[in-house]
Length: 100
Length: 538
Image (cartoon, rainbow over all chains, first blue to last red; front, side):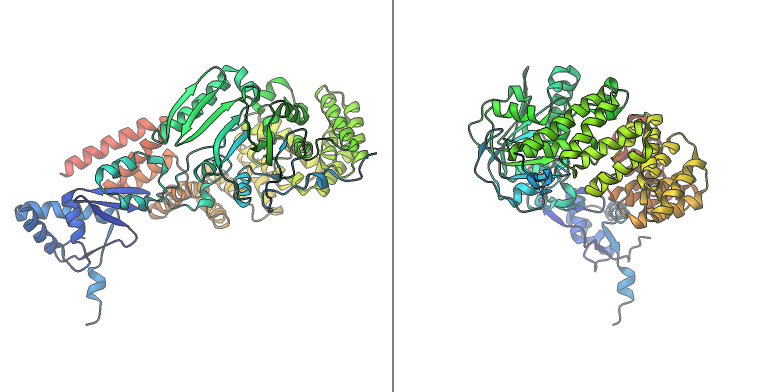
Protein backbone atom coordinates (compact mmCIF):
# COMPACT_ATOMS: atom_id res chain seq x y z
CA UNK A 1 0.00 0.00 0.00
CA UNK A 2 1.45 3.30 -1.09
CA UNK A 3 0.99 6.17 1.41
CA UNK A 4 2.45 9.66 1.74
CA UNK A 5 5.00 8.32 4.22
CA UNK A 6 6.15 5.38 2.14
CA UNK A 7 9.85 5.39 1.32
CA UNK A 8 10.93 3.63 -1.85
CA UNK A 9 14.34 2.44 -2.98
CA UNK A 10 15.48 1.46 -6.44
CA UNK A 11 15.85 -2.28 -7.07
CA UNK A 12 19.61 -2.71 -6.87
CA UNK A 13 19.57 -5.41 -9.51
CA UNK A 14 18.42 -2.94 -12.15
CA UNK A 15 21.30 -1.18 -13.95
CA UNK A 16 20.21 2.22 -15.23
CA UNK A 17 21.41 5.51 -16.64
CA UNK A 18 20.02 8.93 -17.48
CA UNK A 19 20.37 9.76 -21.17
CA UNK A 20 19.11 13.09 -22.48
CA UNK A 21 16.66 13.49 -19.58
CA UNK A 22 15.23 10.02 -20.06
CA UNK A 23 16.10 7.04 -17.92
CA UNK A 24 17.07 3.71 -19.41
CA UNK A 25 16.60 0.70 -17.13
CA UNK A 26 17.66 -2.91 -17.79
CA UNK A 27 15.18 -5.34 -16.28
CA UNK A 28 17.02 -8.68 -16.48
CA UNK A 29 14.29 -10.48 -14.54
CA UNK A 30 11.76 -9.69 -17.26
CA UNK A 31 14.35 -9.59 -20.05
CA UNK A 32 13.33 -6.03 -20.99
CA UNK A 33 14.72 -2.58 -21.58
CA UNK A 34 12.54 0.05 -19.85
CA UNK A 35 12.57 3.68 -20.99
CA UNK A 36 11.25 6.37 -18.66
CA UNK A 37 10.05 9.75 -19.93
CA UNK A 38 11.72 12.93 -18.57
CA UNK A 39 9.08 13.19 -15.81
CA UNK A 40 9.42 9.48 -15.03
CA UNK A 41 13.19 9.86 -15.03
CA UNK A 42 12.96 12.75 -12.57
CA UNK A 43 10.80 10.64 -10.24
CA UNK A 44 13.13 7.67 -10.69
CA UNK A 45 16.11 9.87 -9.86
CA UNK A 46 14.38 11.16 -6.77
CA UNK A 47 13.81 7.65 -5.41
CA UNK A 48 16.72 7.19 -3.05
CA UNK A 49 15.41 5.15 -0.11
CA UNK A 50 15.22 8.20 2.16
CA UNK A 51 12.64 10.48 0.52
CA UNK A 52 8.98 9.83 1.29
CA UNK A 53 6.37 9.76 -1.46
CA UNK A 54 5.15 13.15 -0.32
CA UNK A 55 8.66 14.57 -0.61
CA UNK A 56 8.91 13.20 -4.14
CA UNK A 57 5.55 14.80 -4.99
CA UNK A 58 6.85 18.11 -3.65
CA UNK A 59 10.02 17.75 -5.70
CA UNK A 60 8.05 17.13 -8.91
CA UNK A 61 5.73 20.01 -8.10
CA UNK A 62 8.69 22.30 -7.76
CA UNK A 63 10.66 21.00 -10.77
CA UNK A 64 7.83 20.95 -13.30
CA UNK A 65 5.74 23.76 -11.86
CA UNK A 66 2.53 21.77 -11.72
CA UNK A 67 -0.24 21.82 -9.15
CA UNK A 68 0.06 19.64 -6.05
CA UNK A 69 -3.09 17.74 -7.10
CA UNK A 70 -1.83 16.81 -10.56
CA UNK A 71 1.68 16.02 -9.33
CA UNK A 72 0.31 13.76 -6.57
CA UNK A 73 -1.98 11.91 -8.97
CA UNK A 74 0.79 11.32 -11.55
CA UNK A 75 3.50 10.43 -9.06
CA UNK A 76 1.26 7.91 -7.27
CA UNK A 77 0.22 6.30 -10.52
CA UNK A 78 3.81 6.07 -11.69
CA UNK A 79 5.20 4.75 -8.41
CA UNK A 80 2.53 2.06 -8.32
CA UNK A 81 3.67 0.92 -11.74
CA UNK A 82 7.28 0.83 -10.63
CA UNK A 83 6.27 -1.26 -7.62
CA UNK A 84 4.20 -3.64 -9.73
CA UNK A 85 7.13 -4.21 -12.03
CA UNK A 86 9.40 -4.66 -9.02
CA UNK A 87 11.70 -1.92 -10.24
CA UNK A 88 11.51 -0.30 -6.81
CA UNK A 89 10.82 -1.65 -3.35
CA UNK A 90 9.14 -0.33 -0.24
CA UNK A 91 11.82 0.22 2.40
CA UNK A 92 9.66 2.07 4.94
CA UNK A 93 9.39 -0.97 7.20
CA UNK A 94 13.11 -1.70 7.23
CA UNK A 95 13.88 1.94 8.06
CA UNK A 96 11.32 1.98 10.89
CA UNK A 97 12.80 -1.16 12.43
CA UNK A 98 16.35 0.21 12.35
CA UNK A 99 17.69 0.93 15.88
CA UNK A 100 18.50 4.56 16.67
CA UNK B 1 49.97 -56.40 -47.75
CA UNK B 2 47.36 -54.90 -45.46
CA UNK B 3 48.14 -53.13 -42.24
CA UNK B 4 47.02 -54.78 -39.01
CA UNK B 5 45.46 -51.69 -37.50
CA UNK B 6 41.91 -50.88 -36.49
CA UNK B 7 39.82 -48.15 -38.14
CA UNK B 8 39.75 -46.19 -34.91
CA UNK B 9 43.54 -46.25 -34.71
CA UNK B 10 43.66 -44.79 -38.19
CA UNK B 11 41.13 -42.09 -37.56
CA UNK B 12 42.28 -41.17 -34.04
CA UNK B 13 38.93 -39.67 -33.08
CA UNK B 14 39.51 -36.51 -31.13
CA UNK B 15 35.88 -35.70 -30.31
CA UNK B 16 36.48 -31.99 -30.67
CA UNK B 17 38.05 -31.86 -27.24
CA UNK B 18 41.67 -32.87 -27.65
CA UNK B 19 44.28 -30.33 -28.62
CA UNK B 20 44.81 -30.33 -32.38
CA UNK B 21 46.64 -27.85 -34.55
CA UNK B 22 46.68 -27.36 -38.29
CA UNK B 23 49.30 -29.38 -40.08
CA UNK B 24 50.70 -28.65 -43.55
CA UNK B 25 47.90 -27.99 -46.06
CA UNK B 26 47.18 -30.71 -48.58
CA UNK B 27 44.92 -31.42 -51.54
CA UNK B 28 41.90 -33.37 -50.27
CA UNK B 29 41.90 -36.91 -51.64
CA UNK B 30 45.56 -36.74 -52.68
CA UNK B 31 47.61 -35.58 -49.71
CA UNK B 32 47.11 -36.87 -46.15
CA UNK B 33 45.35 -34.30 -43.96
CA UNK B 34 46.95 -34.60 -40.56
CA UNK B 35 44.42 -32.68 -38.44
CA UNK B 36 41.01 -34.30 -38.56
CA UNK B 37 38.92 -33.67 -35.47
CA UNK B 38 35.91 -35.92 -34.85
CA UNK B 39 32.96 -35.03 -32.67
CA UNK B 40 29.38 -36.02 -32.01
CA UNK B 41 27.84 -32.53 -31.82
CA UNK B 42 28.81 -30.15 -34.59
CA UNK B 43 29.37 -27.13 -32.32
CA UNK B 44 32.54 -28.95 -31.29
CA UNK B 45 34.03 -27.49 -34.50
CA UNK B 46 33.89 -23.97 -33.07
CA UNK B 47 35.71 -25.05 -29.92
CA UNK B 48 38.26 -27.05 -31.96
CA UNK B 49 39.00 -23.99 -34.14
CA UNK B 50 39.39 -21.82 -31.07
CA UNK B 51 41.73 -24.25 -29.36
CA UNK B 52 43.81 -24.55 -32.52
CA UNK B 53 44.15 -20.75 -32.61
CA UNK B 54 42.66 -20.52 -36.09
CA UNK B 55 41.71 -17.12 -37.50
CA UNK B 56 40.86 -15.42 -40.79
CA UNK B 57 40.02 -18.58 -42.75
CA UNK B 58 37.58 -19.56 -45.47
CA UNK B 59 35.11 -22.12 -44.14
CA UNK B 60 33.67 -24.90 -46.27
CA UNK B 61 30.70 -26.14 -44.25
CA UNK B 62 29.39 -29.31 -45.89
CA UNK B 63 26.11 -29.98 -44.17
CA UNK B 64 22.39 -30.45 -44.68
CA UNK B 65 21.92 -27.64 -42.13
CA UNK B 66 23.26 -24.08 -42.14
CA UNK B 67 24.22 -24.16 -38.43
CA UNK B 68 24.24 -20.41 -38.38
CA UNK B 69 21.77 -18.24 -36.51
CA UNK B 70 22.09 -14.94 -34.73
CA UNK B 71 22.95 -15.23 -31.09
CA UNK B 72 21.59 -12.84 -28.48
CA UNK B 73 25.07 -12.28 -27.11
CA UNK B 74 25.27 -8.49 -26.92
CA UNK B 75 25.74 -7.22 -23.41
CA UNK B 76 22.79 -4.91 -22.71
CA UNK B 77 24.99 -2.78 -20.47
CA UNK B 78 26.36 -1.36 -23.72
CA UNK B 79 22.98 0.37 -24.10
CA UNK B 80 23.78 2.37 -20.99
CA UNK B 81 26.94 3.63 -22.65
CA UNK B 82 25.02 5.21 -25.54
CA UNK B 83 25.72 8.88 -26.14
CA UNK B 84 22.21 9.81 -27.18
CA UNK B 85 18.66 8.48 -27.30
CA UNK B 86 18.82 8.17 -31.07
CA UNK B 87 21.81 5.91 -30.61
CA UNK B 88 19.81 3.83 -28.11
CA UNK B 89 16.98 3.54 -30.62
CA UNK B 90 19.40 2.46 -33.31
CA UNK B 91 20.89 -0.14 -31.00
CA UNK B 92 17.48 -1.45 -30.00
CA UNK B 93 16.61 -2.10 -33.63
CA UNK B 94 18.71 -5.24 -33.25
CA UNK B 95 15.94 -6.60 -31.10
CA UNK B 96 16.88 -10.26 -30.93
CA UNK B 97 20.58 -9.73 -30.31
CA UNK B 98 20.64 -8.36 -26.76
CA UNK B 99 21.37 -10.89 -24.04
CA UNK B 100 18.69 -9.58 -21.72
CA UNK B 101 18.33 -12.94 -19.98
CA UNK B 102 22.04 -12.93 -19.13
CA UNK B 103 22.88 -16.33 -20.55
CA UNK B 104 26.45 -17.52 -20.56
CA UNK B 105 28.36 -18.08 -23.80
CA UNK B 106 28.22 -21.85 -23.26
CA UNK B 107 24.43 -21.63 -22.97
CA UNK B 108 24.17 -19.51 -26.11
CA UNK B 109 26.29 -21.57 -28.52
CA UNK B 110 24.81 -24.82 -29.82
CA UNK B 111 24.75 -27.03 -32.92
CA UNK B 112 22.35 -24.67 -34.69
CA UNK B 113 24.39 -21.47 -34.42
CA UNK B 114 28.07 -22.20 -33.77
CA UNK B 115 29.17 -20.65 -37.06
CA UNK B 116 27.96 -17.22 -35.97
CA UNK B 117 30.52 -16.83 -33.15
CA UNK B 118 33.19 -18.17 -35.51
CA UNK B 119 32.34 -15.34 -37.94
CA UNK B 120 32.09 -12.76 -35.22
CA UNK B 121 35.38 -13.70 -33.63
CA UNK B 122 37.21 -13.60 -36.94
CA UNK B 123 37.95 -17.35 -37.04
CA UNK B 124 36.11 -17.41 -40.36
CA UNK B 125 36.50 -14.64 -42.94
CA UNK B 126 34.30 -16.21 -45.62
CA UNK B 127 31.70 -18.92 -45.31
CA UNK B 128 30.52 -21.41 -47.93
CA UNK B 129 27.58 -23.58 -47.00
CA UNK B 130 27.69 -26.61 -49.28
CA UNK B 131 24.19 -28.05 -49.47
CA UNK B 132 23.24 -31.54 -50.72
CA UNK B 133 22.60 -31.65 -54.47
CA UNK B 134 18.92 -32.41 -53.87
CA UNK B 135 18.49 -28.93 -52.33
CA UNK B 136 19.02 -27.40 -55.74
CA UNK B 137 17.23 -30.07 -57.71
CA UNK B 138 14.10 -29.71 -55.61
CA UNK B 139 12.49 -26.21 -55.85
CA UNK B 140 10.86 -26.59 -52.42
CA UNK B 141 14.18 -27.31 -50.75
CA UNK B 142 15.92 -24.48 -52.61
CA UNK B 143 13.17 -22.09 -51.52
CA UNK B 144 13.77 -23.29 -47.98
CA UNK B 145 17.46 -22.36 -48.28
CA UNK B 146 16.53 -18.91 -49.59
CA UNK B 147 13.98 -18.45 -46.83
CA UNK B 148 16.61 -19.23 -44.19
CA UNK B 149 18.76 -16.39 -45.52
CA UNK B 150 15.81 -14.03 -45.72
CA UNK B 151 14.80 -14.82 -42.15
CA UNK B 152 18.33 -14.14 -40.97
CA UNK B 153 18.25 -10.79 -42.77
CA UNK B 154 14.85 -9.91 -41.31
CA UNK B 155 16.13 -10.43 -37.77
CA UNK B 156 19.25 -8.35 -38.21
CA UNK B 157 18.97 -6.12 -41.31
CA UNK B 158 21.79 -3.84 -40.18
CA UNK B 159 24.37 -6.63 -40.03
CA UNK B 160 23.08 -8.52 -43.07
CA UNK B 161 22.40 -5.95 -45.72
CA UNK B 162 21.59 -7.84 -48.86
CA UNK B 163 20.68 -11.32 -50.02
CA UNK B 164 21.45 -12.07 -53.65
CA UNK B 165 19.73 -15.03 -55.21
CA UNK B 166 20.74 -16.48 -58.53
CA UNK B 167 20.11 -19.80 -60.19
CA UNK B 168 22.96 -21.62 -58.47
CA UNK B 169 23.74 -19.64 -55.36
CA UNK B 170 22.42 -17.57 -52.54
CA UNK B 171 24.89 -14.94 -51.39
CA UNK B 172 24.70 -12.63 -48.41
CA UNK B 173 27.04 -10.35 -46.57
CA UNK B 174 27.17 -10.14 -42.82
CA UNK B 175 29.16 -7.14 -41.71
CA UNK B 176 32.18 -7.76 -43.94
CA UNK B 177 31.88 -11.52 -44.26
CA UNK B 178 30.57 -13.11 -47.43
CA UNK B 179 28.24 -16.09 -47.00
CA UNK B 180 27.39 -18.31 -49.95
CA UNK B 181 25.08 -21.31 -50.16
CA UNK B 182 25.60 -23.59 -53.15
CA UNK B 183 26.18 -27.20 -54.08
CA UNK B 184 29.67 -28.58 -54.41
CA UNK B 185 29.38 -28.39 -58.20
CA UNK B 186 28.90 -24.61 -58.02
CA UNK B 187 31.70 -23.93 -55.57
CA UNK B 188 34.08 -21.43 -57.19
CA UNK B 189 37.81 -22.03 -57.26
CA UNK B 190 39.42 -21.23 -53.95
CA UNK B 191 43.13 -20.55 -54.03
CA UNK B 192 44.00 -20.98 -50.37
CA UNK B 193 43.70 -23.78 -47.78
CA UNK B 194 40.22 -23.80 -46.30
CA UNK B 195 38.70 -25.03 -43.05
CA UNK B 196 36.83 -28.18 -43.94
CA UNK B 197 33.78 -28.81 -41.76
CA UNK B 198 31.63 -31.82 -42.64
CA UNK B 199 28.48 -33.18 -41.06
CA UNK B 200 27.92 -36.87 -41.69
CA UNK B 201 24.20 -36.15 -42.13
CA UNK B 202 25.10 -34.39 -45.40
CA UNK B 203 25.58 -37.84 -46.94
CA UNK B 204 22.08 -39.04 -46.07
CA UNK B 205 18.70 -38.03 -47.47
CA UNK B 206 16.31 -36.33 -45.04
CA UNK B 207 14.24 -38.95 -43.12
CA UNK B 208 11.01 -37.47 -44.52
CA UNK B 209 12.45 -38.10 -47.99
CA UNK B 210 13.69 -41.59 -47.15
CA UNK B 211 10.33 -42.83 -45.88
CA UNK B 212 8.93 -42.06 -49.32
CA UNK B 213 11.47 -44.30 -51.03
CA UNK B 214 11.91 -47.23 -48.61
CA UNK B 215 9.43 -49.11 -46.44
CA UNK B 216 11.95 -49.33 -43.60
CA UNK B 217 14.54 -46.70 -42.66
CA UNK B 218 17.09 -49.45 -42.03
CA UNK B 219 17.10 -49.94 -45.79
CA UNK B 220 17.88 -46.34 -46.77
CA UNK B 221 21.06 -45.53 -48.67
CA UNK B 222 23.32 -42.48 -48.65
CA UNK B 223 22.85 -40.22 -51.66
CA UNK B 224 26.63 -39.83 -51.83
CA UNK B 225 29.33 -42.07 -50.35
CA UNK B 226 32.44 -40.73 -48.56
CA UNK B 227 34.81 -41.70 -51.39
CA UNK B 228 32.58 -39.88 -53.89
CA UNK B 229 32.53 -36.75 -51.72
CA UNK B 230 36.30 -36.83 -51.27
CA UNK B 231 36.72 -37.34 -55.00
CA UNK B 232 34.49 -34.32 -55.77
CA UNK B 233 36.46 -32.20 -53.31
CA UNK B 234 39.65 -33.34 -55.02
CA UNK B 235 38.25 -32.43 -58.43
CA UNK B 236 37.45 -28.98 -57.08
CA UNK B 237 41.05 -28.64 -55.94
CA UNK B 238 40.03 -28.14 -52.31
CA UNK B 239 43.05 -27.83 -50.04
CA UNK B 240 42.92 -27.95 -46.27
CA UNK B 241 45.06 -28.24 -43.18
CA UNK B 242 42.28 -28.66 -40.63
CA UNK B 243 39.12 -30.73 -40.95
CA UNK B 244 36.28 -31.24 -38.51
CA UNK B 245 33.71 -34.01 -38.88
CA UNK B 246 30.54 -34.35 -36.82
CA UNK B 247 28.63 -37.62 -36.54
CA UNK B 248 25.36 -35.90 -35.51
CA UNK B 249 23.64 -39.12 -34.49
CA UNK B 250 22.06 -37.60 -31.37
CA UNK B 251 18.88 -35.88 -32.40
CA UNK B 252 18.27 -38.31 -35.25
CA UNK B 253 20.19 -36.44 -38.00
CA UNK B 254 22.60 -39.19 -39.08
CA UNK B 255 21.14 -42.70 -38.80
CA UNK B 256 23.32 -44.76 -36.45
CA UNK B 257 23.79 -47.58 -39.00
CA UNK B 258 25.60 -44.96 -41.10
CA UNK B 259 27.59 -43.26 -38.37
CA UNK B 260 30.60 -45.13 -39.72
CA UNK B 261 30.50 -42.93 -42.82
CA UNK B 262 31.96 -40.16 -40.64
CA UNK B 263 34.88 -42.44 -39.74
CA UNK B 264 35.13 -43.50 -43.37
CA UNK B 265 35.45 -39.83 -44.40
CA UNK B 266 38.09 -39.18 -41.77
CA UNK B 267 40.02 -42.25 -42.90
CA UNK B 268 40.00 -41.09 -46.49
CA UNK B 269 41.13 -37.58 -45.54
CA UNK B 270 43.97 -38.84 -43.39
CA UNK B 271 44.93 -41.75 -45.64
CA UNK B 272 44.04 -41.05 -49.29
CA UNK B 273 45.64 -44.42 -50.13
CA UNK B 274 43.47 -46.58 -47.92
CA UNK B 275 45.16 -49.71 -46.54
CA UNK B 276 43.89 -52.68 -48.52
CA UNK B 277 42.01 -54.35 -45.69
CA UNK B 278 40.02 -51.17 -44.98
CA UNK B 279 39.34 -50.76 -48.65
CA UNK B 280 37.94 -54.31 -48.66
CA UNK B 281 36.04 -53.84 -45.41
CA UNK B 282 34.32 -50.68 -46.64
CA UNK B 283 33.52 -52.32 -49.98
CA UNK B 284 31.82 -55.21 -48.16
CA UNK B 285 29.85 -52.76 -46.05
CA UNK B 286 28.70 -50.83 -49.06
CA UNK B 287 27.60 -54.01 -50.83
CA UNK B 288 25.89 -55.07 -47.61
CA UNK B 289 23.98 -51.78 -47.55
CA UNK B 290 22.82 -52.22 -51.14
CA UNK B 291 21.69 -55.81 -50.51
CA UNK B 292 19.91 -54.64 -47.38
CA UNK B 293 18.22 -51.93 -49.43
CA UNK B 294 17.11 -54.55 -51.96
CA UNK B 295 15.85 -56.85 -49.21
CA UNK B 296 18.41 -59.54 -50.04
CA UNK B 297 19.03 -60.31 -46.41
CA UNK B 298 21.28 -63.40 -46.76
CA UNK B 299 23.62 -61.61 -49.14
CA UNK B 300 23.69 -58.57 -46.90
CA UNK B 301 24.54 -60.76 -43.90
CA UNK B 302 27.35 -62.41 -45.84
CA UNK B 303 28.85 -59.03 -46.74
CA UNK B 304 28.72 -57.65 -43.22
CA UNK B 305 30.11 -60.91 -41.81
CA UNK B 306 33.05 -60.55 -44.18
CA UNK B 307 33.55 -56.96 -43.02
CA UNK B 308 33.59 -58.26 -39.43
CA UNK B 309 36.07 -60.97 -40.35
CA UNK B 310 38.46 -58.32 -41.70
CA UNK B 311 38.06 -55.96 -38.75
CA UNK B 312 36.32 -57.72 -35.82
CA UNK B 313 36.16 -54.51 -33.78
CA UNK B 314 34.00 -52.74 -36.39
CA UNK B 315 30.97 -51.88 -34.25
CA UNK B 316 28.79 -50.71 -37.13
CA UNK B 317 29.02 -54.04 -38.99
CA UNK B 318 27.90 -55.90 -35.86
CA UNK B 319 25.13 -53.36 -35.43
CA UNK B 320 23.85 -53.80 -38.99
CA UNK B 321 24.04 -57.57 -38.54
CA UNK B 322 21.83 -57.25 -35.44
CA UNK B 323 19.13 -55.74 -37.64
CA UNK B 324 19.57 -58.30 -40.42
CA UNK B 325 19.40 -61.30 -38.05
CA UNK B 326 16.36 -59.73 -36.41
CA UNK B 327 14.67 -59.50 -39.79
CA UNK B 328 15.53 -63.17 -40.33
CA UNK B 329 13.93 -63.80 -36.91
CA UNK B 330 17.17 -65.22 -35.52
CA UNK B 331 16.69 -63.19 -32.39
CA UNK B 332 19.47 -64.63 -30.24
CA UNK B 333 22.01 -63.85 -32.98
CA UNK B 334 20.58 -60.37 -33.34
CA UNK B 335 20.80 -59.68 -29.61
CA UNK B 336 24.36 -61.03 -29.49
CA UNK B 337 25.46 -58.76 -32.35
CA UNK B 338 23.82 -55.76 -30.77
CA UNK B 339 25.60 -56.46 -27.47
CA UNK B 340 28.88 -56.85 -29.34
CA UNK B 341 28.43 -53.49 -31.09
CA UNK B 342 27.71 -51.77 -27.77
CA UNK B 343 30.63 -53.53 -26.13
CA UNK B 344 32.99 -52.27 -28.82
CA UNK B 345 31.54 -48.77 -28.90
CA UNK B 346 29.34 -47.54 -26.05
CA UNK B 347 27.83 -44.84 -28.27
CA UNK B 348 25.80 -47.59 -29.96
CA UNK B 349 23.68 -47.71 -26.81
CA UNK B 350 22.27 -44.26 -27.64
CA UNK B 351 18.53 -43.57 -27.64
CA UNK B 352 18.98 -43.02 -31.40
CA UNK B 353 20.11 -46.59 -32.06
CA UNK B 354 16.73 -47.28 -33.58
CA UNK B 355 14.36 -45.31 -35.80
CA UNK B 356 11.61 -45.09 -33.17
CA UNK B 357 12.22 -41.39 -32.39
CA UNK B 358 12.40 -40.54 -36.12
CA UNK B 359 9.20 -42.43 -36.95
CA UNK B 360 7.49 -40.86 -33.95
CA UNK B 361 8.48 -37.37 -35.15
CA UNK B 362 7.11 -38.21 -38.57
CA UNK B 363 3.85 -39.30 -36.97
CA UNK B 364 4.41 -42.96 -37.96
CA UNK B 365 3.40 -44.28 -34.56
CA UNK B 366 3.06 -47.98 -35.42
CA UNK B 367 6.49 -48.04 -37.07
CA UNK B 368 7.92 -46.34 -33.99
CA UNK B 369 6.37 -48.99 -31.77
CA UNK B 370 7.88 -51.78 -33.92
CA UNK B 371 11.29 -50.16 -33.61
CA UNK B 372 11.12 -49.95 -29.83
CA UNK B 373 9.92 -53.53 -29.61
CA UNK B 374 12.82 -54.63 -31.77
CA UNK B 375 15.24 -52.95 -29.41
CA UNK B 376 13.61 -54.62 -26.42
CA UNK B 377 14.19 -58.00 -28.08
CA UNK B 378 17.90 -57.13 -28.11
CA UNK B 379 18.00 -55.49 -24.72
CA UNK B 380 14.92 -56.10 -22.52
CA UNK B 381 16.08 -53.58 -19.92
CA UNK B 382 16.64 -50.78 -22.41
CA UNK B 383 15.27 -47.64 -20.77
CA UNK B 384 15.09 -45.64 -23.98
CA UNK B 385 12.99 -48.30 -25.68
CA UNK B 386 10.59 -48.53 -22.73
CA UNK B 387 10.41 -44.74 -22.62
CA UNK B 388 9.82 -44.58 -26.38
CA UNK B 389 6.99 -47.08 -26.08
CA UNK B 390 5.49 -45.05 -23.23
CA UNK B 391 5.60 -41.96 -25.45
CA UNK B 392 3.95 -43.87 -28.29
CA UNK B 393 1.17 -44.97 -25.91
CA UNK B 394 0.80 -41.42 -24.63
CA UNK B 395 0.54 -40.17 -28.23
CA UNK B 396 -2.30 -42.65 -28.67
CA UNK B 397 -3.86 -41.38 -25.41
CA UNK B 398 -3.67 -44.86 -23.89
CA UNK B 399 -2.91 -43.32 -20.54
CA UNK B 400 -3.09 -46.42 -18.30
CA UNK B 401 -0.69 -48.37 -20.49
CA UNK B 402 1.55 -45.34 -20.87
CA UNK B 403 1.68 -44.92 -17.08
CA UNK B 404 2.63 -48.57 -16.63
CA UNK B 405 5.40 -48.18 -19.18
CA UNK B 406 6.70 -44.95 -17.59
CA UNK B 407 6.80 -46.81 -14.26
CA UNK B 408 8.84 -49.58 -15.92
CA UNK B 409 11.33 -46.92 -17.04
CA UNK B 410 11.47 -45.51 -13.52
CA UNK B 411 11.93 -48.97 -12.01
CA UNK B 412 15.07 -49.37 -14.16
CA UNK B 413 16.22 -45.75 -13.95
CA UNK B 414 14.60 -43.95 -11.00
CA UNK B 415 16.16 -40.61 -11.98
CA UNK B 416 14.70 -40.57 -15.52
CA UNK B 417 13.39 -37.00 -15.55
CA UNK B 418 11.52 -37.30 -18.87
CA UNK B 419 9.70 -40.42 -17.66
CA UNK B 420 8.68 -38.51 -14.54
CA UNK B 421 7.42 -35.69 -16.73
CA UNK B 422 5.57 -38.16 -18.96
CA UNK B 423 4.03 -39.86 -15.95
CA UNK B 424 3.02 -36.48 -14.57
CA UNK B 425 1.44 -35.61 -17.90
CA UNK B 426 -0.53 -38.87 -17.91
CA UNK B 427 -1.80 -38.08 -14.40
CA UNK B 428 -2.68 -34.59 -15.62
CA UNK B 429 -4.73 -36.09 -18.43
CA UNK B 430 -6.48 -38.34 -15.91
CA UNK B 431 -7.20 -35.21 -13.79
CA UNK B 432 -5.19 -36.66 -10.89
CA UNK B 433 -3.71 -33.28 -10.06
CA UNK B 434 -1.86 -34.05 -6.83
CA UNK B 435 -0.12 -37.07 -8.34
CA UNK B 436 0.75 -34.99 -11.41
CA UNK B 437 2.23 -32.25 -9.22
CA UNK B 438 4.31 -34.81 -7.33
CA UNK B 439 5.78 -36.24 -10.55
CA UNK B 440 6.46 -32.82 -12.10
CA UNK B 441 8.15 -31.65 -8.92
CA UNK B 442 10.37 -34.75 -8.97
CA UNK B 443 11.12 -34.09 -12.64
CA UNK B 444 12.21 -30.46 -12.16
CA UNK B 445 14.17 -31.35 -9.03
CA UNK B 446 16.24 -33.69 -11.22
CA UNK B 447 16.38 -31.32 -14.17
CA UNK B 448 15.87 -27.74 -13.01
CA UNK B 449 16.08 -26.30 -16.53
CA UNK B 450 13.28 -28.47 -17.94
CA UNK B 451 10.99 -25.71 -19.22
CA UNK B 452 8.18 -28.09 -20.11
CA UNK B 453 8.43 -29.74 -16.67
CA UNK B 454 7.82 -26.34 -15.06
CA UNK B 455 5.08 -25.50 -17.54
CA UNK B 456 3.13 -28.69 -16.89
CA UNK B 457 3.69 -28.24 -13.16
CA UNK B 458 2.08 -24.83 -13.57
CA UNK B 459 -0.85 -26.42 -15.39
CA UNK B 460 -1.45 -28.91 -12.57
CA UNK B 461 -1.12 -26.22 -9.90
CA UNK B 462 -3.55 -24.05 -11.82
CA UNK B 463 -6.13 -26.82 -11.66
CA UNK B 464 -5.61 -26.95 -7.91
CA UNK B 465 -6.18 -23.18 -7.71
CA UNK B 466 -2.72 -22.72 -6.23
CA UNK B 467 -2.26 -19.43 -8.04
CA UNK B 468 1.04 -18.19 -6.56
CA UNK B 469 2.77 -21.53 -7.04
CA UNK B 470 1.44 -21.71 -10.61
CA UNK B 471 2.78 -18.22 -11.35
CA UNK B 472 6.15 -19.25 -10.01
CA UNK B 473 6.16 -22.44 -12.13
CA UNK B 474 5.26 -20.54 -15.32
CA UNK B 475 7.83 -17.86 -14.64
CA UNK B 476 10.49 -20.53 -14.11
CA UNK B 477 9.48 -22.13 -17.42
CA UNK B 478 10.10 -18.75 -19.08
CA UNK B 479 13.45 -18.41 -17.35
CA UNK B 480 14.34 -21.86 -18.76
CA UNK B 481 13.92 -20.35 -22.22
CA UNK B 482 10.55 -21.90 -23.06
CA UNK B 483 8.72 -19.40 -25.25
CA UNK B 484 5.18 -20.50 -25.91
CA UNK B 485 2.07 -18.39 -26.06
CA UNK B 486 0.26 -20.55 -23.52
CA UNK B 487 2.65 -19.52 -20.73
CA UNK B 488 2.06 -15.81 -21.32
CA UNK B 489 -1.67 -16.40 -21.61
CA UNK B 490 -1.76 -18.35 -18.36
CA UNK B 491 0.36 -15.74 -16.58
CA UNK B 492 -1.88 -13.03 -17.98
CA UNK B 493 -4.95 -14.84 -16.65
CA UNK B 494 -3.33 -15.36 -13.25
CA UNK B 495 -2.24 -11.74 -12.91
CA UNK B 496 -5.71 -10.67 -13.95
CA UNK B 497 -7.14 -12.85 -11.21
CA UNK B 498 -4.79 -11.24 -8.73
CA UNK B 499 -5.84 -7.79 -10.06
CA UNK B 500 -2.31 -7.06 -11.24
CA UNK B 501 -3.65 -5.57 -14.43
CA UNK B 502 -0.45 -4.10 -15.82
CA UNK B 503 1.45 -7.32 -15.36
CA UNK B 504 -1.42 -9.18 -17.03
CA UNK B 505 -1.40 -6.80 -19.95
CA UNK B 506 2.34 -7.21 -20.30
CA UNK B 507 2.00 -10.98 -20.47
CA UNK B 508 -0.77 -10.83 -23.06
CA UNK B 509 1.36 -8.48 -25.14
CA UNK B 510 4.28 -10.89 -24.88
CA UNK B 511 1.94 -13.69 -25.88
CA UNK B 512 1.05 -11.75 -28.99
CA UNK B 513 4.71 -11.31 -29.79
CA UNK B 514 5.28 -15.07 -29.64
CA UNK B 515 2.75 -15.23 -32.50
CA UNK B 516 0.86 -18.38 -31.69
CA UNK B 517 -1.90 -18.03 -34.24
CA UNK B 518 -4.35 -20.43 -32.60
CA UNK B 519 -4.04 -18.40 -29.41
CA UNK B 520 -4.09 -15.02 -31.07
CA UNK B 521 -7.81 -14.41 -31.03
CA UNK B 522 -8.25 -15.61 -27.48
CA UNK B 523 -5.42 -13.32 -26.32
CA UNK B 524 -6.83 -10.44 -28.30
CA UNK B 525 -10.17 -11.00 -26.59
CA UNK B 526 -8.54 -11.03 -23.16
CA UNK B 527 -6.55 -7.89 -23.95
CA UNK B 528 -9.73 -6.11 -25.01
CA UNK B 529 -11.48 -7.09 -21.75
CA UNK B 530 -8.47 -5.87 -19.82
CA UNK B 531 -8.35 -2.55 -21.64
CA UNK B 532 -12.02 -2.07 -20.89
CA UNK B 533 -11.41 -2.90 -17.25
CA UNK B 534 -8.53 -0.45 -17.04
CA UNK B 535 -10.60 2.24 -18.75
CA UNK B 536 -13.40 1.74 -16.24
CA UNK B 537 -10.90 2.07 -13.38
CA UNK B 538 -9.83 5.45 -14.66
